[in-house]
Image 1: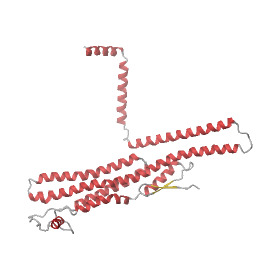
Image 2: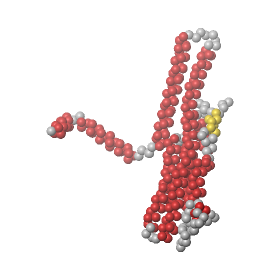
Image 3: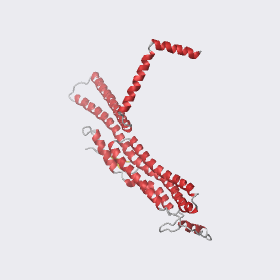
Length: 324
């Protein structure tokens, strides 16, 4: 009866190490373990890192020159509380309310994180590699950063255009939009830890899979040594004398077994690394192969021409002319 070893990752999830047995097959065990570990990662793991950006979203309701639903004219109320004698200026127009813009953009950020979460689940089950996690997280972070950076730039352009359109457009449309755009920029920067947390959770699974692969080959070496020791003990039960040559033979077998296990471990690690790099590389097309063939032919022709006597004589004349 084989016991399963339990470990805790950085997020508190329990990672149960599968019992690795030669007859079951390493890849089947790792596939089963990866699926179970990925299933235990829930999307609600983003709640804690999302708290800071959610606070920025709440603050956005209180930084507004227009009327906010339920809260009313929050900016004017804040000014009256800070300066009791202050009176609101009489405005001939009502500024446009953009209270909904940070809410819509924050919902878009959550949707991007959810897409990254689903894609990570599929890719890690298929190929548990660190490069896959980095590529997906960087792509999602780029989308969030692009949206949060683009809105303030658009707002600045609208501000410059509205200066010539008059006070009503400038104060009624451009200023409220730019205020919300700057708050969205802050939310985008504060939202990046959410994507980082997803990357950490899935990276723990990848690291554990790699550890299991390493332990597998160590166990093979240990089992081989135990098998040799058992054979040695059995050979001595019948009272047969064990000679120095027998001991040397057993020693050489143990050494050879250790060497072969180390070679197998290195070869498997090299193949795994190569497969991960191939998965992260772009596909090799027919056009690229033709370009490589053309380059190889050009190099061959150049090398063959250097061996030609006439070419060498011409190069020497050219060198003499250059020196003169």
